[in-house]
Amino acid sequence: MRVALAVALAATLAACASAPAVAPVDARAEPAFSAQGRLSARRGAEAVAVHYDWRHSTAADVFDVATPLGQTVARMRRDAAGVRVERPNEAPVEYRDWTALMQAVLGAPIPVDGLAYWVQAVSDPRSAADIERDDAGRPLVLRQQGWEIVYAYGDASSRPSRLVMRYPGSDPVEVRIVVDTFTAP
Image (cartoon, rainbow, N blue to C red; front, side, top):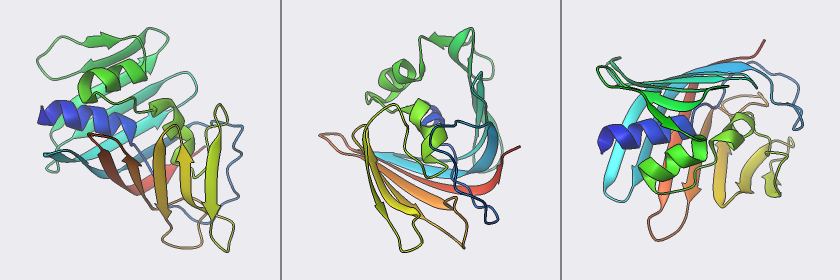
């Protein structure tokens, strides 16, 4: 269950950026990027800590999950063929989309598609959102799709260096993400 939790949560929460000051990201765009970092997640009594490497574009995602010592435990892919999880020495497992993967593994509808926006501190333009901003106009708290995302910024960057995502309910989920690197072409 720990590996499944790691896979699901890592896929979900892949990347807040600690980058030099940049112009705010256009909420209508979903630019390509790569992000690497660490995340920890808790759901009930289950907890996990992993390293991730996420390469995102509108056409595909590749999300690698590794132990804190660097051993890759899973690769998640989204492309024209669908969404699948590949683990060492196991056959790939196919899912119809990210939401189905999250529901199967975690029992919660984690909106992975929205993360490409959230990690850049913008709301997913496909659904309504409530945003609280700091004095510089950067999002501090974003509420969307049942999730509350709390941002922290390490410097004057418009991209967050950390985020904490919480999904309430009878079996709440909390994920903490630190982004070590974020690169956008």
